[in-house]
Image 1 (cartoon, rainbow, N blue to C red):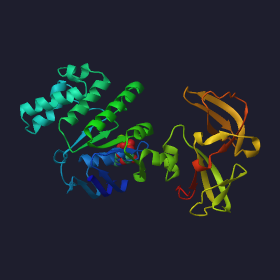
Image 2 (image 1 turned 45 degrees about the vertical axis):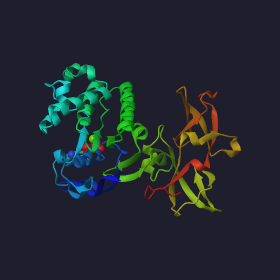
Image 3 (image 1 turned 135 degrees about the horizontal axis):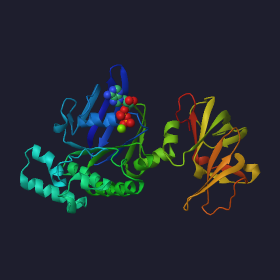
Image 4 (image 1 turned 90 degrees about the vertical axis):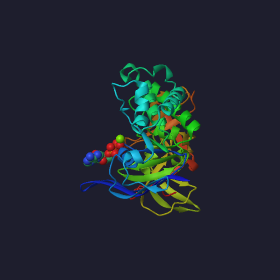
Length: 358
Ligand SMILES: Nc1ncnc2c1ncn2[C@@H]1O[C@H](COP(=O)(O)OP(=O)(O)O)[C@@H](O)[C@H]1O
Ligand SMILES: [Mg+2]
């Protein structure tokens, strides 16, 4: 069932358009992540759903009702902000209870909901403290608690973890995942961090300059990015991308010339564009004898992360190829490296449109 539907949603500031005709159907219980670089319009889109930003065009439907003209308080959703926006002079308990009190909810119900949320979020011991007496992670939990007690039909999060240090960010990410598994509430979550997006999302919406590049499950985006933008945005280390020429169809495959070498890929491409970009992830490159090599060069840097080893190979024209090696690979800086690609892990993009061709 669709919980929230966006139909041709637009946002303009004067003559400046920042959100262009966005269509998304958010399923009931789904965890949807809006991801994209800073300034692409994530917060603007989320704030329009929340009712904090006027919608310039299109239709927003929440729970089967058009809500374009409704104020935030009548949309039955709760938002958690990056800066938490807690009231400094109120205790944790008062912060969590405030919204319910304003709606005239009875004291008994408020007490029940606050203690239940406090238990779930493990902040029961801090209920009488002020926000200033809490750590960043605890404040984050209070901000989530304040949303939970309202029992809204959907939760909206705007970069809720970006003010936390790296370790706490991972911990809170797990907490949010656990919470969602338990509550199964419809959630729209904004982040610029593709790892957060990949780990939390049922589906990801990749935004670029106010437009949708692709909507899909995390691994769909990883394995079949619809555009060069998505290919480069999702995955760490970044996918290798190299200029290539289409030299012709070869049986059911495609002939390419990359870095001066002919490569035949098993996949057919949809159009015979002249200028294309070949994409290949570091784990889809493997060492091989010189005569089979797609790429050859000297190893410039080795990064040993323990569970993975990455090598950076200089393949000429000041191009660097990132290659994933077996984690205990005996490789040395300066060594000559020959690699070939896994044909199933190749991606071809049209330089004219940026769109996937294979
Ligand atoms: N009040 C405003 N007036 C004009 N432009 C704005 C305003 N608010 C945001 N923008 C512009 O809208 C774009 C999207 O901003 P935002 O939604 O905050 O991006 P994100 O959250 O993805 O970083 C940016 O280019 C920003 O400069
Ligand atoms: Mg933002």
